[in-house]
Length: 362
Image (cartoon, rainbow, N blue to C red; front, side, top):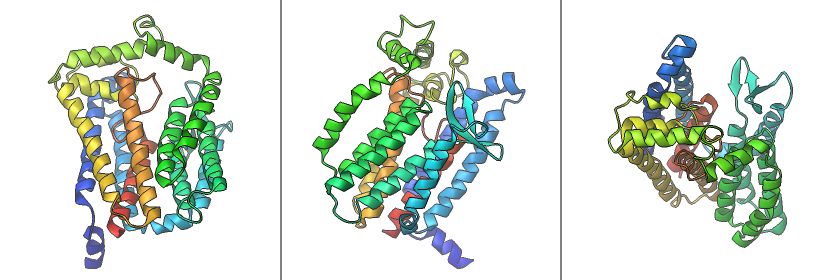
């Protein structure tokens, strides 16, 4: 028993561990404040959403501890099988009877009565593939660069077909940054991005164009596609600097997706500008501290995997914050470790467990 305790505590980065758990704890409190009214009205239980989220948080914390003890080098050995399985799951969302449709989108599959979003594990699998490819062999070979870029495009395309344009763009952004850090020529990457932009625009659906128009002129479409964004603005104005107090805001009852994509608007109304600053500082601290620690990791594979995890995390956070503040069109991306979503929080806590192991082993 003593050996087990020593293994769990030796060399663990407690500062990063504490920051992660602090963000999760804040997320649960904010989630309760944002959903109790809706849960009572819809399910007769004000704790309906928090109960479901707490189950995944407990599973996620268990995964965080377990993966922090499993040597990260094992992931290098199972990279290709794990990637293949993740891609298969991504295809299954389009299979009737397996894939679950909600709001016209096929983003989930149902396993044992539980909805799972395959885009979460497949993005981690993509990190493993890119890290493995650029750890072995010629780091800057043209064939390797073409294959790596092909993997990114294929995964982003499949996610876009669900349709989930926001997650698709996030996948291309964090993967592009990781490729540059791995040695991919930045000029070629920029050219590919510029050439690919028209293809993305011409394949956008009508409702996605509506979101762009609403972003460009929200008050013109305030009763239609910009209704959500205007409600978010009102929450920010209502909260002021100090906020109304956690759970005290009322205008969020007109805010749709307040426990998923727009949960930051609840923070703005309840905790004010000071609360927003605190949340953003917490995200920035996790990102900067994690990257600084990874710079000291000598093993290239571990360094790339850890960097990919942080890039995935921070790009998603930045995109969500920008959407809620009206700096980007609505994308449907949630706020990691805070928004409601079981697969998302479970995936991120498992990945942070791997990150902790990388820092500990190195």
